[in-house]
Length: 218
Image (tube, rainbow, N blue to C red):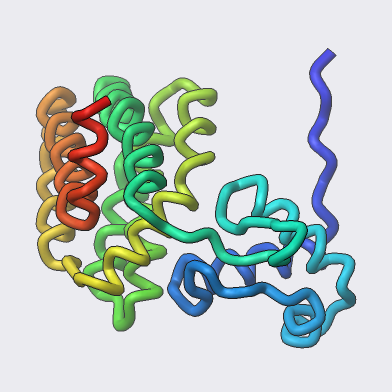
């Protein structure tokens, strides 16, 4: 018998999305302490939904719960970047290839790309870029593959936020996004998959060159 996930209470969901947004847009930085009482006051709720939200975020890998240090935003290093981007490199290009082969609409990806191009701040651009990538793989026809990529999506966004803070590379990535979408719209599934693989690989190589070296040694 398949178990049905327990719905998250609305207040917990509200806090969860609020904290996640702050982490993924750089308002809360890696290593920063997340104090329940402070967050409860900021969101206007009791500590219970904050505590439950933090537990969920720990499960997705965005925060770390430590018996002695409390809860902190997850630190980003080369090992984490390599692990997360290894998964993306293995799965995301194949998911895009299948989406293109199925001939699905890519209007959502096109809309997300336009929002990214027209963004007025890094937070808007970051969220639009995440939506662009998800739109490429979520229509692959394999729900399990989509869920697996969703599981690393937030961690990948955290890696990106840290990398962009140190070395903004929006214009280069926007150009690569447009080329990926062009190939996909042309029905070139293999070309789109190759372009996406190159896009993901080159980003982590630029942002965390030491991650590439460790991966080659293993």
